[in-house]
Length: 76
Image (cartoon, rainbow, N blue to C red):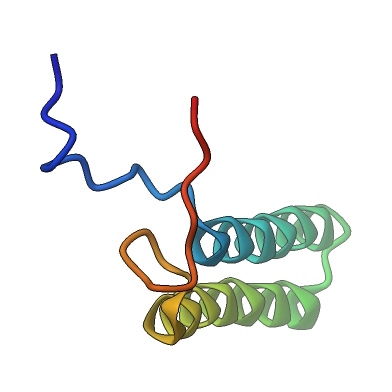
C-alpha cells in the first residue's frame, strides 16, 4: 500500500492539466502541419509545446501545483 505522506499526487492539479492540454494541442497541430508540409507552422507548434511547459511551471509556482496552497485535492 502506498504511503499517503510520500504520495506526490501524480500531477492531478490545475497546473499539470493546463500544461498537458496546451502541449497536446501543440503536438496535434504540429502533426497536422507536418502532414500538410507547412514547416513554419510545425515550428510554431513546437513553440506552443514549450509555452505549455512554461505555463505549467508558472502555475505551479503560483500555487496551483500539487502541493500549492490554491490546490484542493478531490477525494477518490
